[in-house]
Length: 294
Ligand code: DGY
Image 1 (cartoon, rainbow, N blue to C red):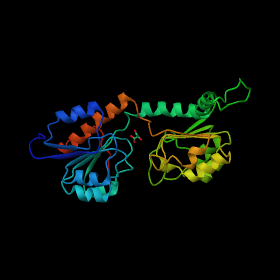
Image 2: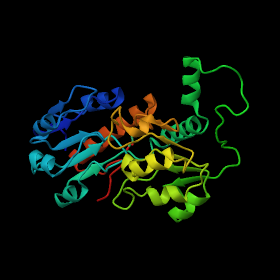
Image 3: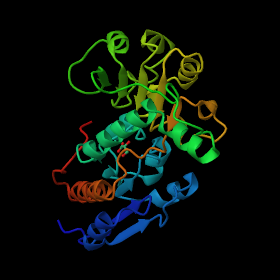
């Protein structure tokens, strides 16, 4: 089936990187409506936009819930998300309606892994504090123990969401660095809590590149403020963006980034192409390059 064969509406919830945008423009879809901004669409405009759509291309910041699905209506065939995470999609509702889901696994793994290493070193070697001291005149001399941190060499890095499954308590107790890289599911929600932080070594550094909701942030705050653990580096928080007066931002031993794990030009372009290919395949009823099986 050619996409121009009958009237077809697709709604795209944001401006996407150029390579995906170009592919979308060439696809010959009769009606592509798009939120022409780099800023998130409002709920009201999202509901207006999806009305009557056969396809939705969305981002991880768009909540695709029952109301959105109801508003889109029974023609909706495919939701393609420009993300590997699918926790913003009401998967049970989507499955009930026989809608297909495309997502972008694998292509962002390298960029996200690089960011994890960067965040781990930034946090453990206290780079933000050092940069701040240079700027504010706190750098008065080389001092033996000033701004000392924890070293990666010979350390044990426990990664939640990769390879061998180790009981969580054991991973917490044995690791010098804990990196959370798993998907957010009902099972992983708030799994890094008071009990988890109590099991960690006092010298350990906690890094989260997954989703803010895997962490109980109040418990993390207490663990950091009471020196239960050495430091934390977070690329993801709840909510996003984190309010600038959030208690975690008052801590010197907590480094927070604005969810930039996959933020390289190359990766975001590849993600956008994949998201468009998933969308087009879903509209045509063909196999998707990456379908999230429901
Ligand atoms: C994703 O794709 O889910 C990441 O969190 C952002 O790139």
